[in-house]
Image (cartoon, rainbow, N blue to C red; front, side, top):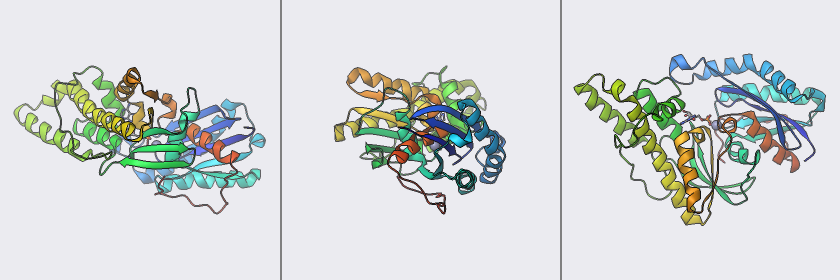
Length: 333
Ligand code: KG4
Ligand code: ZN
């Protein structure tokens, strides 16, 4: 691995830049956009504007922290998709311009592939094949990973993603956006067995989370009619019980997949992999002969470090993009 790459991630609401040198991440700068909080969700137009403002300082900071100059770069990588088209446009246009100016190749990276390959940044690293539960705001999938570019989706959500389930139930509880990390924090002081929410009946390896959201909604409507302060008085227990339901669904399906495919190496990726209960419950599985891989927190959320690591796989295999490459809002693995 003899190369230095600048990578840019701008698929959603984080502007991020990273430098990787000979397979080692030297910097991973992540600027999360705060502008969406007051709107209770991501406003695409505001996201692209914010990327536009932040991209130059974030890239400068990535170079500075890495102690690398622009002339040392062998390639520029960027997230091609999937994501918000306006946000992707900012990162891809910037990457194209810089690659052209420096006369170096361009590398187009798949965002979900990068979440999975984040497992090859630090040690210990899984060996192929392994199973990866990819859980983010837009995705919930179980992926059989046979090689750095060979994926088979063996289970996926039929409706909401796991991150959406956290965010939507968080909203019902009056938590600020995004609900996932807030709910995780509050759940630490709650009783996860206090309330029971419906477990969806979905066969095989697929998931469903819309029923969890409805079950929480109807329960809260019923209880707040009797006691308007119900949520306030039970907030920690509600968070812990909701989290337990979502996490138990994820773990159950991952264990089922492991049995079906006879693969005991289990990994998680995507924003929800930062969830402390999911991490703890997965780690518990090590007692039963599973090998569990949990990425460092900075590589769970959207970050350019994972784009950089994926780009180094692509660079070694000489997989470059033409300068006419277009970002893709939708792009399957
Ligand atoms: O991968 P990501 O940063 O962006 C997407 O590509 O979607 O994932 C964002 C999702 C959000 O739904 C957020 O609520 C969730 O990840 N999330 C969490 C936690 N941290 C982030 N969900 C539960 N617990 C957390 N600690
Ligand atoms: Zn993501």
